[in-house]
Length: 113
Image 1 (cartoon, helix red, strand yellow):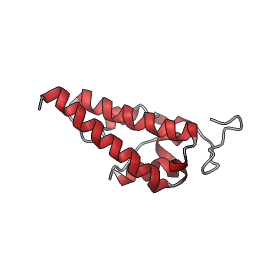
Image 2 (cartoon, one colour):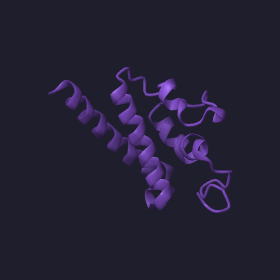
Image 3 (cartoon, helix red, strand yellow):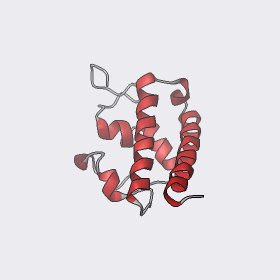
């Protein structure tokens, strides 16, 4: 976060919930994955992603891995202000591809094949 506490992309007050869920940049990614996070409350923080299970994954290990991967990549894009992050669709597609590869690998590890 910046010292002035404002999001560098939309100039709203930046906190964890804003960074990972409600910023337009993050919303574009979640929306691209067809995940609706509008029911999540800022008062309950980012942690509610694990209980709300927006990825509709029943296996906790896979769900945790997917959510951690998504949040980590959102953070990397924000922290390093990568050029792909300046275009909502550029970074959305790249992150979605990473996520697909990660899910396939995790399922192979868990279930073989």
